[in-house]
Image 1 (cartoon, rainbow, N blue to C red):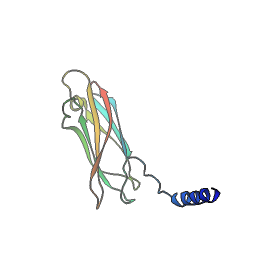
Image 2 (cartoon, rainbow, N blue to C red; image 1 turned 90 degrees about the horizontal axis):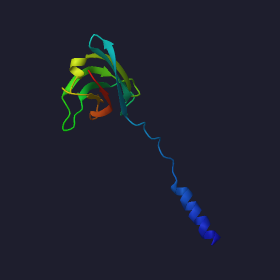
Image 3 (cartoon, rainbow, N blue to C red; image 1 turned 135 degrees about the vertical axis):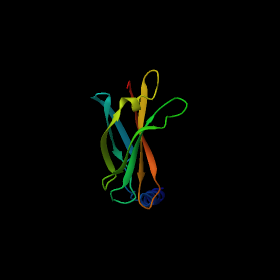
Image 4 (cartoon, rainbow, N blue to C red; image 1 turned 30 degrees about the vertical axis):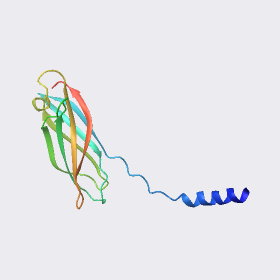
Length: 134
């Protein structure tokens, strides 16, 4: 029995190979803060997994979230550039009139951040939804 267990242990040891490090999950985060005068400060930050470690173009679209279908972008920013590691942070202003996507009640907005890597397909990451009255 001991030789069988030793062979099984040797086989198991041979099967465990080093695994490459997992890539950090892609993410986006949106904050909306009042600036006064009917304007709001929007901050969008996050991370993309890039095919190469080079600064890469991206865009931000703020979209109104609704039950049946989401509104067209209400406020956007582009062209922007990530750092070489795929991290990004951008702050800009948007009027409350644009963020007010529901004619009655509370508004719900999220950021759709799209990256355009050289030699690879573009793709998007959706942020958290921010609720407010604008």
